[in-house]
Length: 84
Image 1 (tube, rainbow, N blue to C red):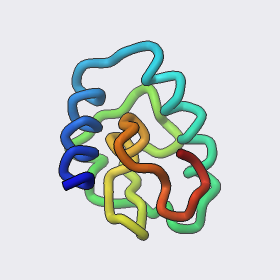
Image 2 (tube, rainbow, N blue to C red; image 1 turned 30 degrees about the vertical axis):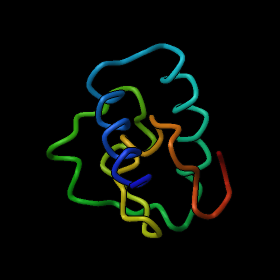
Image 3 (cartoon, rainbow, N blue to C red; image 1 turned 120 degrees about the vertical axis):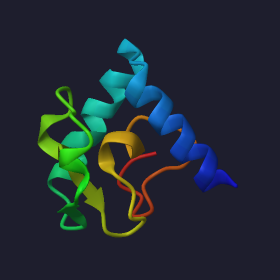
């Protein structure tokens, strides 16, 4: 249930931006951009992320989530414990 809640919250925050959420997402994006588990996905065509350019179109290979939404939620942390 946590994963579904995290996905929904991430999409909500992706669509309806909040400056506090965006600031936290930018910090997380710096970490994920350097992670070998961050890979280009098919999301770039669907998700125009102008704020988190360093992870635009990428997904996490561990949880398979698009980074644009994963980084904008607080329901679950990084499964590799790189951020909470």
